[in-house]
Image (cartoon, rainbow, N blue to C red; front, side, top):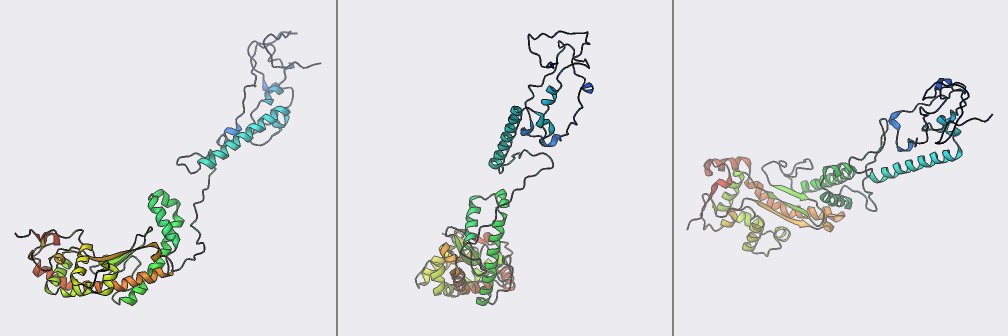
Length: 393
């Protein structure tokens, strides 16, 4: 006897052979064949690839006769066929018609491909969702540091990668970028610290007043001490710098230097006339005292007094030196002068030329002598700025 399909269309007539109770559902407990175990599926791992179009699932309406008849020939397999697929290929999927199985497989592959493409293209965008539920994670490896290439790292040199990192840092001066490129930063930092340690040893051989100090403090008493400093800066695009002296000194050392210039101006002038000083830090000034002083004053004129310091005449013969509030020298270096084995030699050479200037400043700003000068000559003044007077007509 042929089975009647439970899927009815408009205009189909079905003759009832006996009276049936009015019902709109099929009692699943009275199926004519053993029920299959329904596989469970966690709601947390659902994604677009698991959703199946259920438009074909049929729910008999009230007009369908004989729905609750336990002897009905209604084809219950039509409901089972339309159950959603699970993440694994189950016996339900194997029961689907061949054409429907192909359709489900195509939808799965298309959904998975879309998710993979989205992950690849959007993974680094802030706030992106990877499409994974709880219990899943995406591990993103941070970029590795640049390879040393053909130039090995050395304690006596600045590696080209360090300048490349500083160049990138200037272009991406952002905390988030620095976190992502932490490996590159650590590599550049180690390269710089090892170079400074080697340079400090060379400097200690040049200037025996320099003790063994941390890499950040190249001066007689450290970075915050009252003594003159040696200064080395590494920067890309020919912006490296070597210099030294006293920058923005307090009132006591400023008063001490001015007093020494007033009492014995030849001390500082003889230092400025040194061949190494003139060539390296005074723009190659000729062996002329006036020209050497002029070059030194020009290099420190940024915040010099406009008139004269208190206690000095406006027509003082060395008024240009007395107006200064910085006592420094310095010169820029090109990238080629810093990189390679010649970098250490070039910087050490400049520090050696600067040594007489640093020695002179330190001989003047001894803390005990500076304190006595402040008590006797400054009349309680707390800063050099307060000692400025208007020029007399």
